[in-house]
Image 1 (cartoon, rainbow, N blue to C red):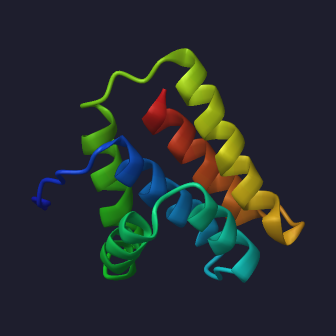
Image 2 (image 1 turned 45 degrees about the vertical axis):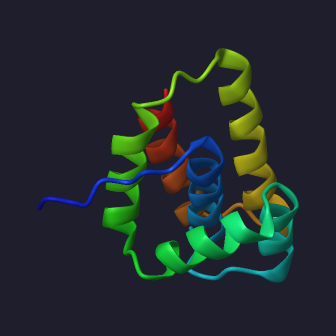
Length: 111
């Protein structure tokens, strides 16, 4: 399956990853979405949310995998991203099996 190329900048990729984390358990709660909105501009959030909403999980992971390779993330940037991912997972005060599985998959992709 050939996927379209993304032209995301780091902020857009970051927002997309956090949206995937928020949706890991197949339910986005307001606390999760509010955390993401605090970390990005309204325009970026709206653009990426619209794109994310039309993608399935397989396509989302493929887009992230293809795009993350284009950026040279420093160790500190990756640590900050991982912390934000965990903040999203725990926003609803639960860290269920689906979130743990997605976390491992994303860990393999971004490192």
